[in-house]
Image 1 (tube, rainbow, N blue to C red):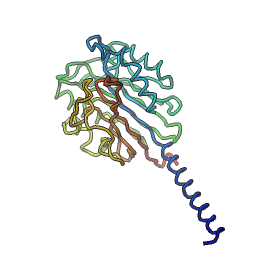
Image 2 (cartoon, rainbow, N blue to C red):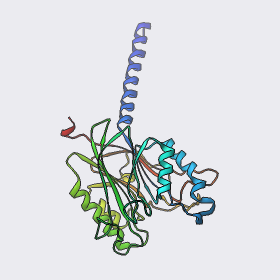
Image 3 (cartoon, helix red, strand yellow):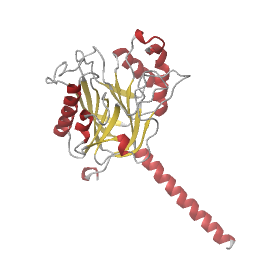
Image 4 (cartoon, rainbow, N blue to C red):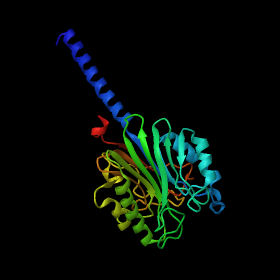
Amino acid sequence: MSTNMMRRVVLLAAVILLALYSSAQAKDAAAIRAMSYNIRLDTEADGANAWPHRRAALSGLMRFYAPDIFGMQEVRLHQRDQLAADLGDYVFLGVGRDDGREGGEFSSLAYRRDRFRLIAQGGFWLSPTPDRPSRGWDAAYPRIVTWARLRDRHSGRAILTLNTHWDHVGLEARLASGRMIRDWIEAERRACESVLLLGDFNATPSEASHQALTQSGALRDARSASETPPFGPAGTFNGFDIMRADAAPIDHILVSRGVRVVRYGVLTQHDGGRLPSDHYPVLADIVTPRCRADR
């Protein structure tokens, strides 16, 4: 092969590699990084694992993974305010479950202000009286959903995002919660709108409450839908014990049909055995589909 021919081959290979690299970069840019994280409420009863000893590690983890959207559970007002100060680039949504204002735990939903524009927001209680603070069925506590309709500034596509925390005691309450959220999404979802559901369900994928959301195929669990093998352990509850290995997750990310799940992971970082929370955060990179309205 002549020198000139060799140069042409090398140049062509370089152009192909550059094109492939650019394509991969464009795919990454289109992806939305979503996270669900039960951060554990602030209680002195946790001793060495109480919030003041965990805040820096948890904020650092969030900054490093930089989710575009995240849902958090067991959030007290001061924890929300501290995280908003620590992270800086996010808009936080949601109300306290006890009074619809600032009382009790929040199921906070947050999004990057440079990535999304807020179209609408709201919330409802998981009970027969969803429009007012209330405890439903056999639940031990009031349970709430925080939702937001967002417009992706990069793609122009809309995504209906929900965050929730189901009851840890009431089997009936969890099943009713799954059905209620499923029906709410069916009623409220607009054409060409993707759905992202984040939350601590206190239920594994085999429980009827989880299956109430996924059985029809309208929503898919990100772990099973991931295009790459799931990263990390299956279990998401750790109880502040790095050796604990639950067989199945109770924290979930669900997406509507047509949404690609590029990757999924359960993140187990700790600092010398000290964990940021008694749950591991769950992360997924997703790509929402185009529809005629996007063209």
